[in-house]
Image (cartoon, rainbow over all chains, first blue to last red; front, side):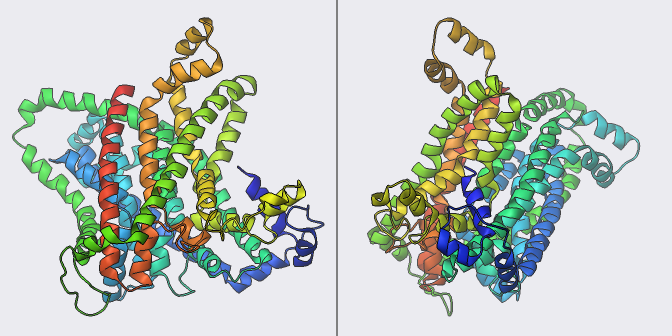
Length: 254
Length: 338
């Protein structure tokens, strides 16, 4: 399972000469980082990273806010038709993006949002919050009523109860959701591919995917691309794991 | 696509679904009991809570509902993407029925279901119980966690990056796989893995198994923790070997998880796009084309938005039907667990 990662790492630090003489399976003689640096500059990788961080970060925050608001109404407010509202959110989340992509592309052109990072942020905020609403609503459904009633008796309005009581207590779930939204948005491919056509707006995933699709990369470049794409994912993975473990305590808010 | 899948991993690994659901039930029961006095001002509180749903509802209207309705509408037209669309009724759907490329793409979807649902579920079951039984008992839980993490890693990788890694490994000239085959003297097996129409689909399938396996593994491992160890011990005392215990204890106990994993993975398999885009571009000669890539081609390469919309509508109906079934099963599984 992890073998491909080792092969990538091994070859990303080889010089092109060493690669062509010894092939992909030999151990590298030394550490040669020019290939990585070259690739970084050629695709302006710093910009792509920044785009990915900006888009994924905004989506993570905005989608959590949206999820919290909707889930508050459903899980604690117990609005009428709750199961149907929940079902709607789940199905919206399961919808294949192919069924949205063309109208979204068309509408964003009409609205002057085409090829802006904002357009992608808006769409993914809504898509991710569908899952967030579903998860948070079921967690908040188990929120101790006494705590809310006590706060209401103390004179807190619904808005205050939400931010002063519900959100702080639900922080573990909210943290998990934020990390998930960030990673999922980082990994998204189809919509960013369609929406972000200019080089300056592309995310890491799209930039690497498009490069590969054009097939103008030599072996050394492919390796550099693979390594630079894998590293952030591994970094998140470490955070992701720890946050998830914390998330197990989600239901423990008493 | 991976996203849709890892979501459920989170749901299962987080383990939050079951306990909170149970509490939800009881508190709802509690409410019903006290409901008599609170009835009168219930409507007024409901109204103001509904305000909190307003931003979400509006956002969903603009980003999901309207585009989805538009897509369905476009599917009944001959629209090229510019100009005025002309209404053609069911013509696009009629054309789909007779389109060999479309039928081919759905056959490849079935291959993806095998690669992303059936094979990973079967392997995941064996691996999960092996990790649980052997590694867990003899090497300790630390090793289990490390191995589980290794299997799960591809799930958090952007699909485009996984695609780059694999297209380089599977490259015909000096790709690692061919080099490796050469090094051990199996030159005869060397292939143009992604460029040969006979091999391309199997190569993509193999990569998808690699991507997907971590998801069922994680779910099944958390499911195994729920199984009462007394069942295994009783079977062991009765002289059942590992395989018989796996077959008669583990499998029946994990039935709810298996059903859910199979359905969610099938949905993910129907949505495959990124990997096909990066690895093969649907080629060679359509040998790896899938419905979502076929729709994309019609939207953005052939300028047949109407036809593309019809393809994606058919795909959507299929996925939504499966999603409804999956949700029903999941609710039932959670009820059984609690």
